[in-house]
Amino acid sequence: MNRNWYRLKHTETTKLVWSKSMSVGNRIIDAEHEKIFFLVNKVEHAIRAKETDAVFRIFAQFEETVATHFNNQARIAEAIDHPFEEHHQEHQYVLSEFQAIKTELLSQNGKWSESAAEYYYCFLSEWATTHICMDDMKLKAKLETYPYDFIPPGTH
Ligand SMILES: [Fe+2]
Image (cartoon, rainbow, N blue to C red):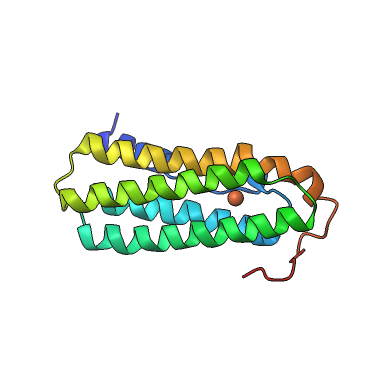
């Protein structure tokens, strides 16, 4: 078997790809989820390549995107009368975890090991997948009773 083919295949399968089956029934939330997947892939690439500047630039973008997403999601959940307290606590925890990872990476200044890179990537990709496919899926039934383009006031 051609080894490069295997490596290419392996790299491809570790990438997060958003698909329509992950739709939670709202355009804003879906678009943000897709962006989150895109940024997790970019962070992973930068971590593996040990491109310290890129790691922090993309990580900051990732954190900002997630924070905006949490706010929009909370607004939408409130507008459709979906209980959100549990989500809110999870969001606070996740944002502080991201902060901790960033601080850890910063202190290592590009000298992290392959296994550390693997750990950070797994943490981020697992969080992103669980967040979309399990946590946010709970909103789907209710969101589907609204138009796909539903935007409550104050959403950015
Ligand atoms: Fe979400």
